[in-house]
Length: 77
Image (tube, rainbow, N blue to C red; front, side, top):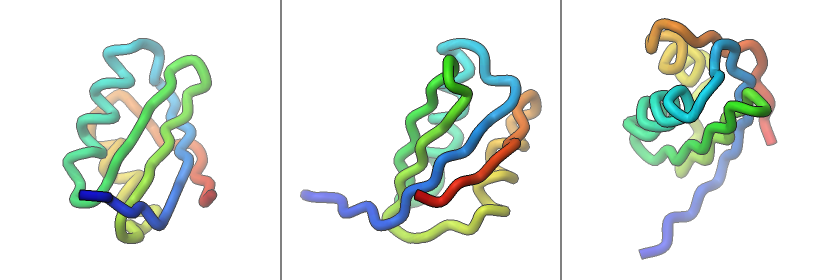
């Protein structure tokens, strides 16, 4: 099966400092249907690939609900 991901976003996340943070954010975003996320604590960026477009507000809210992270910047790629 090939998953075609049509939309890409890059989130800059404040508070992400370690591999545990990366995993927590990735797992939370990957729970959204059709989403694949890869976090990088050293750049504080999360690349989000989506099968179907998910709006910015939903992505931010999903990350912010974890509790210790804040999406500071959102960039459509």
